[in-house]
Image (cartoon, rainbow, N blue to C red; front, side):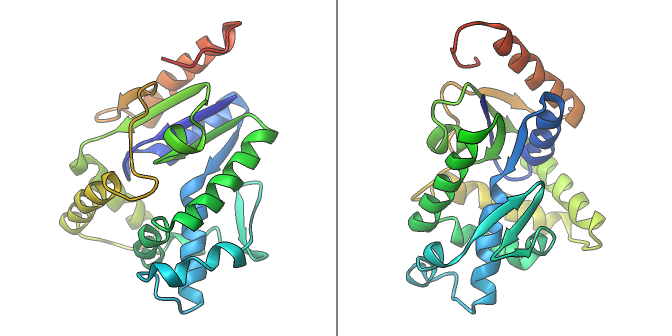
Length: 224
């Protein structure tokens, strides 16, 4: 079974997906980490990541591999290194490269062929796994998402101003909705969950209930 969780930045997708996968005994796939790893590769190579022509060759050069929850770039564990603000800034440009997105989608589909999967991102249910059995779309008010993002960075010892983070999220939403490839779209057959005022446990409980109901049915119809 493939379960997709899409939604805007800082809507709680990663935490919810990880917890849902653990409850179901499924594999969790952090697709954002894969794009972050590509962005890190671009930074290290001295590539101008705002120049699409320089980014495309990365698709043929980099090698990504998961070992459990750790992500390796060309044999190096970069799970922690990809979480820096610099990588965050570069990732949005890398994710706009059609060739890189094509490679990432291929890798993600390969993983989905081998196991039950909970995968999250912004195009998992719409483009990468359009026939997934269960699709979710998480949303939250931009102000709430900014608060969460500030808390995440603070936990890493990287204090950021809430106002700056809010502005960045609003701009990110606008950009994600108009991306030339992999634009943020709510799949028409996805269950939308607004996470405002909900704990992650409550969000996951909602999703788990829907998945369990689907698992109990003999048909292969999607969640809804």
